[in-house]
Length: 453
Image (cartoon, rainbow, N blue to C red; front, side):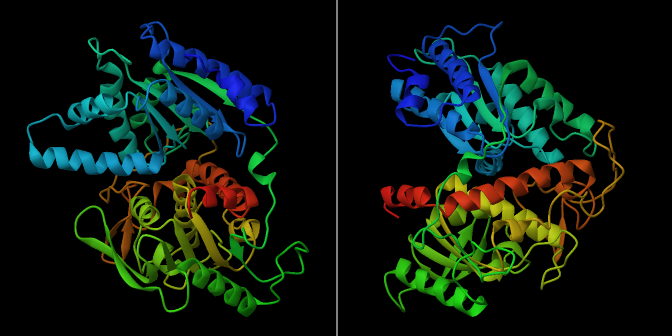
């Protein structure tokens, strides 16, 4: 870009020279120059879809692009996580429709986005929900079609996004996939795919220390490298000592109530120091006590940059049932969702757990989730037509004590039905394990300290 090379910047960071990361950076550097010079054309794809395995450096590459193009032209790019972006999109559409029902809310929102940040860097793009796919289709149709010919900066929308699956495999064998195909066509038309695959998970090439530890769990016979806690009582004592230290002393934390969007919802946090840290029970985060979803996790992680999860968090099993009757697959889905949001928001996460990351989450892997059909991953479309709820994967809808979703079936999220649920969940487990390890590393602690946490 203007006097700045992404590849040279990558080298200056002292990072391992990964050929696929370098190739992706070269493509992004070329795109950045075209965007800043307003030299994109209708025949050139001015968006990038970065696909790759867990810990391969997808987000790192995107973040380098975001930082570089914003340095060249401040404010041109916005970087956010998919869940946060969708949460904000729903809220803004609701506000626009409330203020002027006759407006085309998607066009109005698209113009607002383009005027603020015409380059959108979106981490962890995913489709597990038909409702959100339809929202994304309408939004991206407008974003990619609206021109800004009289602006001195970028004249067209550009999307840079990361994902674990190629575009043509998103929501593969999912329910009513035909309704998702228009969105896939939009992505394929406008995005050049950059692949970063590999066997190395760079997040795990870090080291844990006593001070940086993220998970507090008892030592087990199967894991000789576990922390020095002989039993659950010792692990809990150390966990609580860490919380007291984070609060700045004993008897400092107090019960607080956090308002949740949208509407008049709230969640009770039993121990918290406002704007600093909070201790929240696992049952509140992921069970029926709090009835929380992705949008709520975004709010909590913006309110508190240090979150302690008490419990302990159990060894999650897709076939199990939690204390409050929540199915294991749903507990796991919500916990992974929370870890993703905490990681992307840069929160410092400390968890009282029954085991290490692999032990916590491996019970959610591989098999199709409860309610699975016979989808074999061949692209055959599964269809369900039935009256029901219409919640998104980013937020949970309840009617009484019953969880509903866009499957049209009660007590069944789209992520837990069909082969799309099995494949997405298996990758999400690997990503969460990887992220929990990084969040317990000395490198993550240094990052938190640099941010004043």
